[in-house]
Image (cartoon, helix red, strand yellow):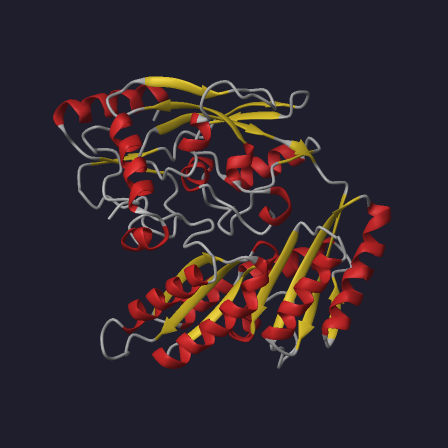
Length: 411
C-alpha cells in the first residue's frame, strides 16, 4: 500500500458510496478497526518506511505501518527517545497510535501520542490529500487540525505520513516495586511519592488479583500474599537516581509498605516490566470472559473508585482485577468470568456501573483506548448533546456521506 493507493481507494469508495474501515495492526481495545458496516478494509500494515530520523531537529518521519517498538529501538540507538509506550508496543503501529491517541505508563511524565505528533499527511474520504501541522517544535498558525485528527479513530482521514517529535534519551533509568498490605495503603503510597515533588516517569498500581494471575509466568517474582504493589520508575542523571529512589522508598514505607524491591540492573528492570505487561495476557488466558475497561479519575479519587469497584464486584458476583497508571489516575478495570454467569448481561451491567461511578467522581470514560464501538452508547453520559452535535458537524464537513470508519464513536 502506498499513499497514492490510499488516495485511489478513498476516491473510488466515495464515488460508489462504499464504506471504508482503516486498519493498522488491529491491536485496539474498543473495536475501532472492525468493519461493522461492511465495505472495504483499508490496511496500512505494509506502509512501514521510516522516512527520516533527524537528530538535529529531533524529528522522525514515518509511515503509519511502522511498529512502535521498532521505531523506539531505532531512535534510541541514536541517543533519542520517543516516549509513548502502550502495552502492545511490540506489535501496534504508529498509525494506530495516532488514531487512538495511545498512552501508556510513561504518559504520566511525558504525555500521550498527541503531544508528539507535529504533522500529518492525510487523505480524506473522496481522495483529497493535504498536509497539516508543521515540522518545528512550536507553531500556532490557524486551527490545530493535527490535534483534531489525532484520536479521531480513523473517522476523519487516513494518515499516510506522520511527523513525530523526539526528545533526548534520558541518560539513566531505575525502577522499584513497593509491596503493600492493601489497595488503600497503595493509594496512600502513591500520594506520598507525589508529595515529594518527585516526578517518576511511571507510577503503576497492581491489585492482588492481577498479581496472583501473573505470578506463575512472571520473570520478576512478587512474594506470595502481596495484596497490592506500586511500581515506580525514574529517569534522569545517573548520579541523582539512587537518592531519588531512596526518597520514594522511604515515602512508601511511611505510608505502610511492607517491603521495597529495587531493580539492581537493567535485566531486573526489564523483568519487572515484563511482569507488569504480562498481567493482561495472564488474565485473558485464565478466564473465558475478560472485559477490560479503561477509565480515568482525578488522582485524589483513585481510592474512592477502587472502593466502588469492590462494591460493583460484590453486587455482580464477578471477579475483578485492577491495574494501571496510578500517576495520572488511569486504571484498567477487568471484569472476569468463565462464561457461566446468569442472568445474561451481568458483565454489561457491571461495566455500566463502573462508568457511572467514574463520571460521578469527576472522571472520563477512556484514557487511552478510545470509544470505538464498545463505548459509543455511553458517550452521551459524559458529553453534552451540544458537544456531540458539534463533533458530528466536524465529521460531516470532512466525510459528508459518513463512509469513513462508520459506526465508531457516535452511537
